[in-house]
Image (tube, rainbow, N blue to C red; front, side, top):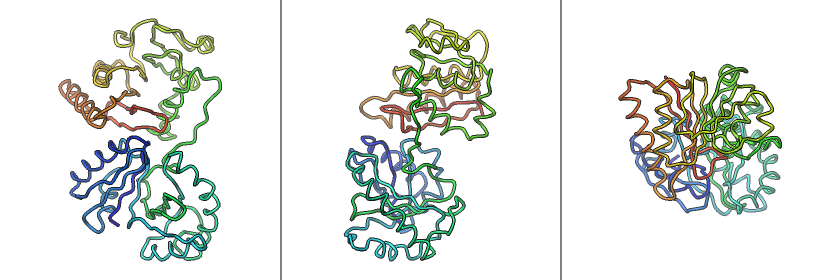
Length: 353
């Protein structure tokens, strides 16, 4: 399989392509990207016949920033007949490994959403035929590869596989989160998704215990603070703007009217979160300072990206954090991801190693 299919946020195809071009080149698997802005996906075509499968074995999905989901494919299948789409697909699957689950997906675009009804109707008969042919296991299991059908239209589809433990958990790489009516802003979903993405269930139970201390920089009106209060953490909410009264009534929030870049905690905390809108390099530098000074054990933050050269801006922030913490002798771990609920931004998770 020499086609690597990568889903991304529509409009971020250039960033997704730049990232996979860099990583594939570093991994020694040359190729080129095919993109069209707004399509919501990128195709990386490898020169080697098995290049896509090799990339997926060499790279770790969780370390990709702009990629929501990926799979290796032999290429685009066109002209599927409406009378029988499954037979041509079965012919293309000769030599495929047995798979433990089936994902029938589309890009995250308004045009692709028109295929949702077709995909729902197609899923059950397709799965039945795949099980009958032995391509899909009788019972769903995450121990086997996952089979992907990525439809561009009812007649055009990319078919392929991803490997156990090295792909997004959710269909299309999109977690289905419901906006809590009590939260003061929709930004609350970004921190909710960040906790789900960066922490395992066991880590969430251990690292987000009731009574832990936290700081929210740029907190008003309290979307991110709401997620901390929901988990019964004590929160110092730093912002010159007003906080939602419901949060202040919780008894867990102390509101400090101060610039988030000037605030220094009186004692160290377990968590600092930051959704301040400023230059990404300024935010990155401030996050490094908080970790270097030992003011917080763990930090989740957003980097608001410029309109152009967004991938370069992210790389520069990574380099800046590496330089500042390296000079201070601090060993650390940094994960970055453009989450589904992010817009022109990426989310980071920084902590000491």
